[in-house]
Length: 214
Image (cartoon, rainbow, N blue to C red; front, side, top):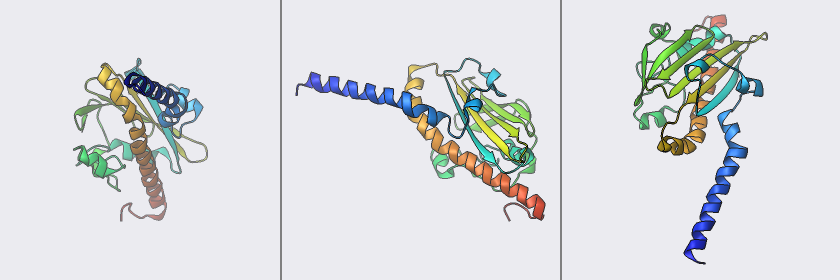
């Protein structure tokens, strides 16, 4: 087989893989756990980056009220904050200094608008801190918004919706996002499950009088 034929075949294979990923795999990755209505909804924080190059909307149902969920969002961040409730060892390989806690840190329960939360090379600024309803941060360069919405449901559960909106100004950013999308699902799925477990434990502790983490 001639080299030009091999190259052409390789290009076709890459193109087919890219097309298949975009058509069949990408949306389940970007929208894990979210309903079609949640994906289509306008949520708090969308206005912070209205023209986004990419959006992910992921969600989970938590058997607890919003007041049991919000504390874990308010204190997220690197040490001495509460961590990100995901795979700490992976994040710390990247130098993020994350140490996920199992108890509420009272000193971080009143985040201020404009407060800075370092996230590796990113400086995230608190833009929305609506206790029990929504929490959102935006990167200092304006290219990333990470927002959480809490929906109180009549059955006593909460839908926690995590939405990432991002702008990709450079070709390198666009290329780098391809492996980042499935990687972000692995980390964010673990985070949402981690918040769910902690919130449900906190709700149970209020009934029993126990202290979470003990």
